[in-house]
Amino acid sequence: MYKPSHFDETRLPVLHALMQRHPLAALVANTPAGLEANHIPLLLDGTRGPFGTLRGHVARANTLWSVVAPGAEILAIFQGANHYVSPTWYPSKQQHGKVVPTWNYAVVHARGAIEWFHDAAWLRGLVEVTTARHEAQQPRPWQVSDAPDPYIGQMLGAIVGFEIAIRELSGKWKVSQNRDAADRAGVSAALERSPDASAREMAALIDGAGPEGAS
Image (cartoon, rainbow, N blue to C red; front, side, top):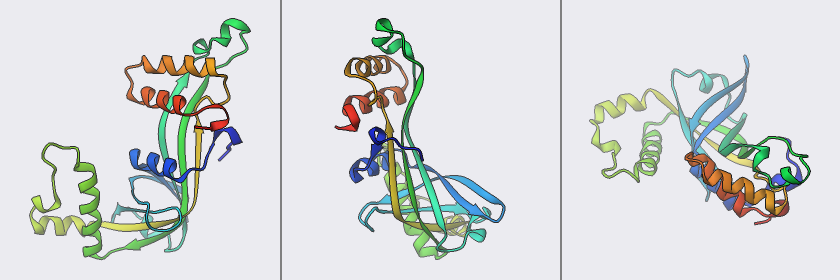
């Protein structure tokens, strides 16, 4: 990933926060047919390993688990807030006109070795933890135990679990750090006026990052 120094984000809590807020990752693997990407919600355990461990599952009908060997390197890409930036939002446009459109975004790349799991107890534990996390905001959270055991057993038989021990974590926060304070304020204000939640999330990232990416 091309990453100029002023867009480089290295703080582990910041990287983990994006991964947890935006858990749907593009899982990229090298297969006999070439590069393959699958879009899978991943669960981060930040307490395991120097950079954390990712867990998830694929459908057993997905050939990924059978063509990617245990220990193979995987790249998981987490996409955070992103938004188009218009030159009209920069006060400097009125001063000299030397401005062009761009796109702001925040992403995390996680690399590590994958391991596959077929054990029903392991899979049930994964599904229970994942469900508890994503159901937490519901008025009446659904639980795995709400469904009949035979049905859950059938569903668990249709998936294959995996873990990725992260060995490398890289973040890029392109959030207008290369603009002066007035231009950053102009972009943030324009995004704040948008009804789009992603735009407002990007505005918060801009407000939290000063020149050269300092917070």
